[in-house]
Image (cartoon, one colour):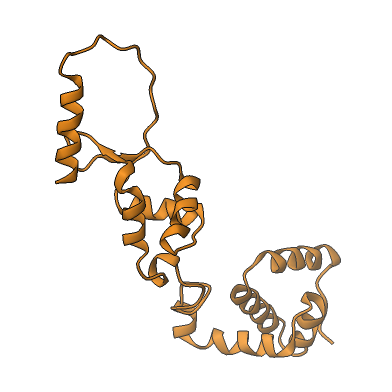
Length: 176
């Protein structure tokens, strides 16, 4: 029988073990079992509450350099795919929704914004046949280089007799 760790050390080991991701848990358990030698595997399984197959996999990974060099938690390609990658026509639908609600800087073509809020855009997209969350809307706005713009209220500095003509010209330029 392996001499157990003191109860205070066992408690620290259990807390630390629970704080790790699955891959790190099995490797930590394997290292502790190797340190203890004969009977160490059974002792560690009892103290940390891990399955013998988990510990066996951890022991195998300790001798596999490729497994130890793996950086991510999941294997490449694991996890749910992004809506940006899976929904066909998402970009076009966003641009159609924003078509009449986009403005920009006359001095810098790269500066553009919309007067719609994120949840308003998300509510208009189902009309284009696509349902997405405001998080996806945020990603789309960033992808298409839309910036946040805060409305500023200022007093009018006067009126111009050509004011309407200016707006008609801007509208014609936008349409072309």
